[in-house]
Image 1: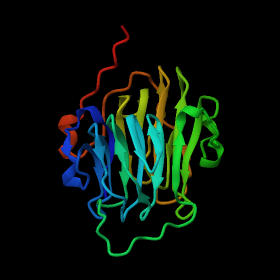
Image 2: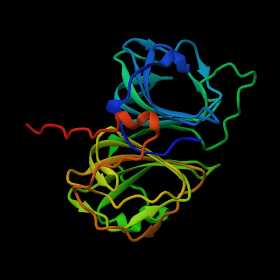
Image 3: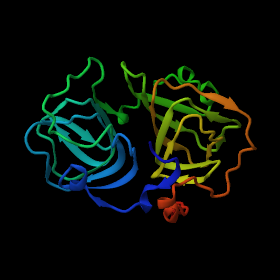
Amino acid sequence: MRDHIEFIQAQRLPWQDGAAWGRPGTRLKLLSRDSDTGAFSCVMQFSPGWSGGPAAWLAVDEEFYVLDGRLVVGGVDYAENSYAFWPAGFERLDAGSAEGATLLCFFSGPLSTGAAVRPEVPAGRLVRKVDMTDGQWDGDLEKFGLASMKARSRMRVLREDPVTGETTYITATFAFLSGVRAERHPIVQEFFLLSGELAGNTGIMQGGAYCFRPEMVKHGPYGSPSGAVILFRGMGGKQETFWEDAPPFTFSPDHAPVLPAELQALGAPWPRPDRY
């Protein structure tokens, strides 16, 4: 299981040696980890000139979004704002980064290439690449129970797993529009604020904010004076949304993050970026 985190600014987390987590030549900021399965989420930074060595595969699923820099794998160029989902057993050919890269990463277990048998990749699970800069906001908000957000946001579905129904998507919210109701989901949900500012029931988040939310935790309503781009990742099945009444929304909520004991000292607000 993982602790409820709502929210922590990734900027405040310390860097760790990526070799200790199974990826030499990198460093990472641990966002959350499952104590039972070893699954973890992190911000991972690849040094300029990094090479993944010979072709390799992992015994776990690997999912990532490029925050900056560039990664090239098997001739596929993953530049800033690129996304991929590689199922366990997917062979990563000639992985490298000439200029370095920083990725938001999700792994379904500990990193290991030492399994005796390479897992078979189920048909339809691989998402080789999605490039957010092609501008396709084609997600169906109503499908996920989010019809009430349609007037103030857009969605891009990055992955919809044909086996588990789990979904990863990005929403972009419009500036100065806000919700009026709170929501719950019967699945685990984590999100990372890619850019902008987001005000909600636990305070004001800036770009780099991360949440890990267990099933049916009440959250929101949310609003943003700047607009916000958020990556959401669901675990445990298809997403549904249940709406309920909440205290009136405010663009100036009290700072009250929900954090495990070991992160409370890092839970201070992050300042809004300077505009001049």
